[in-house]
Image (cartoon, rainbow, N blue to C red; front, side, top):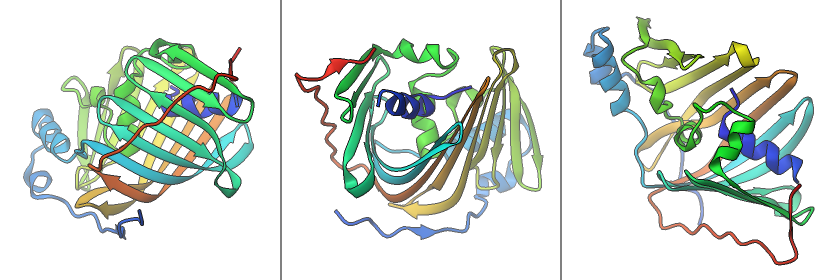
Length: 259
């Protein structure tokens, strides 16, 4: 499965205030997880309670994009207005912006400043690259280290070993496995569609504390789609929550629609 973050970064490649102090934290099991039994409902309630909650999210991430062995180092500036839009600016050497995108639950807008082209599509455009189980909330969740909502299902199987909880199951022919730590933070997500020869793995690590919230400072995304291999490593160097944000996006008159 190719999630929307991979779609955005790949499409952009193809058509293409001082940071608050952040401290690495030792993730301690919360009292809810410590005393919860192995019943599915109890565990799901505990996991949902520890999902990152916010109104807006702003971050800068040093990012390595590797597509079939072609590696590029860029910086992503990410802004999220929860449940409404995701704004991404991609800069390369010397801070020069090369691309910008705005994703909403209904649409995808992108501009490639290097080639002077733009892309304007309904959100359904991603289904040419990903399964219909992928939606806007999928990307939003992965960017902040939350569980994909559809995977927190009572229909799945659940097991707890050494404080780690594994949730697994089948979502419309999509096999999934979600690994959650003793503190109920997601550490790994695996998605596999064998019929389509697609797989996706997301690993969250190096958890930090920012604005009284705990989130991964590193998000590794590895995708295989038939003969295409994509790896994205996000390393957050700055994170802010619930600030007033702007999401500037305009298409210059001289730009042409991407073919």
